[in-house]
Length: 554
Image (cartoon, rainbow, N blue to C red; front, side, top):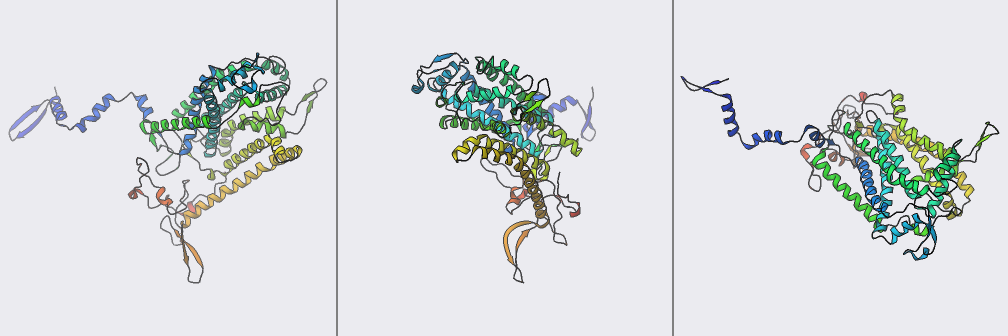
């Protein structure tokens, strides 16, 4: 046994057992000294501890994905309720429900069950409208999430798979929403089914086989509603939930991307831990999303199917429009010139003009965003990992391409309602079609050029602030009678009157009060509490102005 010799007085020695000395030291130690050992024994396993200690950066734009997720949760909950009362059958019956104007009208069981949900099932109309609003919120928040990822460069390595999965979530959600519209079998969905029939029929070589297989014969058939029902309530939601699970797994695998700022580097994450602060905020956000959807479902009418009447194959309303996120496809079909291409196969095989805007264009829109990260990385020869987000102004080419794509989408969306616009303003429909074609050719390139120049201008303004200072709003009269504004330098100016601050990619203050808001703040219970002692005296890093990077044009 190992022993230690101690001396209490000259000439007197004691031999102390190390275990006995350790027990004495533990009993004498205060509670705060023994707590770590107790916590060490009681803390959770290593994988769980790693998840709970995961840090998430703070910024409002990072909540867009969570809003889409919580909207999907609302879709699943309300969809389960609606599926219990919906009858996916095209068998014809005579309506004898509570809605008097349609009583005695022949209609399908699918449409009759939709009316029963709206008027006879307790809370059915509220749940149906909540389901509809949750669908639109899911699509809108997913679009905003993808735009945020694109403009900030969050799709770069190592997040390229996450970008692809996010795009698949959007397109699967889009088609799921479309099948939900079509299976109600009202007058509006009948027009949508006719469009789907025409699109599938336009596919070369296999179009006829596709339409007969999908509809079970000539339009409208007797099986399409039942098949859409299986897709809408089983297959597509399962695929969507699987993609969401993969997306969450990829997010946990890689550390979150964050905006450039004080203390933030490519090797760390500055923010809040998952539990408890971040988790509590997410619970609050879910309650907020639920409340907004419930208020919209209870106060704002949407998709009043009882006003459209039952579907008839020979009847189509002139002002029927698809959902707002599908109007770009309708606009593309309207603006496409009637160019029919005949291939020299046999006696000649004609490709109808509908094939190009309704099949080829969506295919391009699906594939091109997925391969864009590879194209950008190859163009810049960039194979590094990026965990810091770009400010859109610092990447003008990418930002201009995004603005060009948004303009292209908006033009198609607006002219998807060209007949309604022509009727409302008493304008020729032919003139509206030609105006849409001209706008589709001119506006996207114009948006590219304008956005590119704006980005360069914002970059130049940031560098002027770093070089000269922040505007104070104080006007000083000069001895010769002129006037000039007093600027507050961000650092000690040099002999030439310029501050030696290079641009580092962080937000640059534009007003004097912004100098305080850029500092780290202690979080209060309701409002942030500023700590003047922690406000930095300068912004950025000092250096030679010649070392400052030039305007980024890529």
